[in-house]
Length: 159
Image 1 (tube, rainbow, N blue to C red):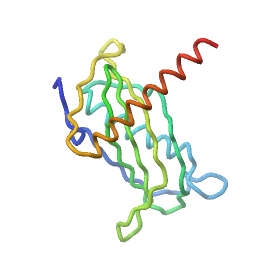
Image 2: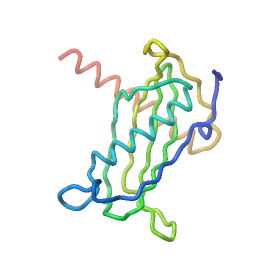
Image 3: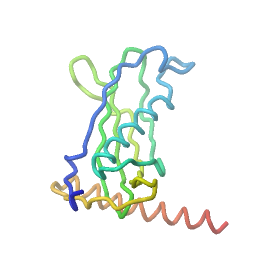
C-alpha cells in the first residue's frame, strides 16, 4: 500500500438512465435509489484509495436540490476529500445530464467510509496529497465536519 495518494487516483464516476423501476409515487427518482448509487460510488472511491474493503460509517449532508424524472441521465461523481487514520470522507455529487452534455447538480452527499482489513477490523489508509486549491479547501472543510461528527457522537453516547 502506498503511504500517500492523490485525490485523482481514486476519483470515479457512474452513469445511469432513470427508468420506471427507479421512480416513486410522484414519478420522480426515488431518493433511496439515488442513495444506493451514491453509496456505491463512495465505496468505489474508498476502496481505490485504501486498497481494502470498506464499510459506510455515516452519511451526512445528503441534500436533494432538484428532482430527476424518467429517462433523465444521472451522472454521479465521487472523490475523496479527507483521509484520517482508518476512515475517509468522500464527496459524491449527482447531476442530471442533458442530451447536449450540460449538467445540473441535483444532490450533494458526504459519506464517511472505514477501511477494513482481512479480519474486518479498521485498518490504516494512505494520507492525501492535496494538489489544488479546491482539494485543500475541501480537506479543511472535511476536518471541520469530522470534528462536528465526533462531538455529536460524544454527546449521543453521554445521554
